[in-house]
Image (cartoon, rainbow, N blue to C red):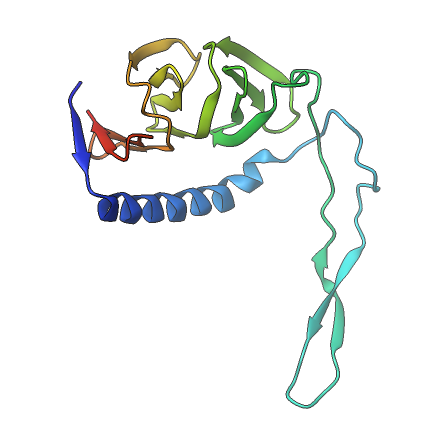
Length: 190
């Protein structure tokens, strides 16, 4: 693997692009994460419409009750996250959601119902958001930059640069993974 150091300006532009991609992906993936839940929602299945306000110049607020629905919790998971091993930065991939934890676990759940698909232990806190290129999941930890199989979490490779503790961005078309380091560098890894 080759590592290339890039300027902070390039890093900022790439992070902004990745944020736009992740936001779009979440909006597209949201309908995939629907279904029955592990924990019954506090509200009934049929949700009352929320009130939507519209304002005209110089007029009072009008309310249209048929526009929006009140959201409710479909499922939650707590048993897999003991004190000190909090989940963070979920990544939706097809029909599963994957999270990294403070103790270095990578845990996958079914989107529709929250049933655990599997856990892999990598030993050190997984930093920031997970990233993927369609075949692999990438993450940074105090062990360095790691790539694992997207289907089963098996280790594919690990780059032992412990300074690589920033967010990871995988760009499949380029065949590159970008990661920020606590040494002030951006690393491009092929």
